Image 1 (cartoon, rainbow, N blue to C red):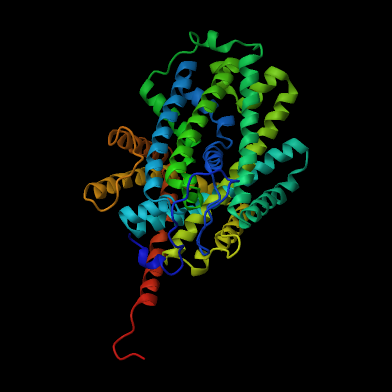
Image 2: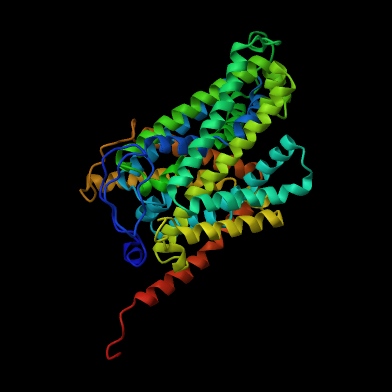
Length: 481
């Protein structure tokens, strides 16, 4: 595969498939210089759910209701977004089974389209997407913690940095502690959402909004445009399932468990999102939801009073902390894969000899994210590359066509797990990704231009490392000693 000659210098040895087992069960023998298989099916599902559910479901439903107005259309957009996310899970499930290596999209893009697109994916993730997200989510966690505890704004930066350092330390010492932390906080965020949904659907609502609002609000004049505009924040809220593929090499029996984890996790999130929106609509009504700046707090506060607002504040703090752990856990695997191909500093490719983690990549990521937090530049970075996630999603989905073509030519083995509805479903997913990309660019062309420039800045960096690696590996000249 492309990049293999560079990978031989630092990368892990191929690992033999392992029988399916839980996280706590006995493990098969593993190579001593590679990643350790410690992530079972349950942890995989928690990674998928934790990678999708952040703070979006607590806030974004108001934006959707503002754009489509009616309860039926609001639920319909969230269902449509869930279908797109499910297709994405199917696609990443087949790709993960075909190539269960650490790095996820980086590996698929490199093998299908060459090293430059893969490098730009990793470069963007390292420079601004993942690290910017870590900084932004850490500040969000600190803000909700301050609201919960009553501490002053002077504690915002120490809390943000403390969360980054704490979770980076947890993940430095092994994928098992990181996965266990993820399991705990994903379960806690699901419990918080379960309380919200249970209260909204079981308690007597002071405002039976769905019954009243079906006939009251008018559908938008241009239904197609309104649905399309509402779909953008919905698709952003559903993004994140792909991050589990970053740790495919650390999963137990990834050929079986990775597709299962993706499907179970995405189905679970779609169910939770639909129930949460039904709760908002039943409690606040479509107009009330559209006018709310904090739908979850408003809904639970209306049902059970001030204690409900406090509970949701704690729930959002837990949810953002869990999401922060997920990004810190998975992203360094991409940087390590890039460095293992000779496209970045060699020390970034090394795994810790005892903990079997990309320890240097974790430390680099923490330092850069803290710098972004301290300078306050993370918001501008995230706004500039808000389209980048779905650009990568679409390009990664396109790699499936390359793998299928090679399969037909007998160059790669036939995958046991296959995307249903191929080729229509991948094409629909790519079309959705292009829509988000175009919509984000049209809504803020200046930010899209900034993001393009930042990503384009990776091209000379790629060329430098490419030339340096080739010089290092070049054979000596004739007659040289």
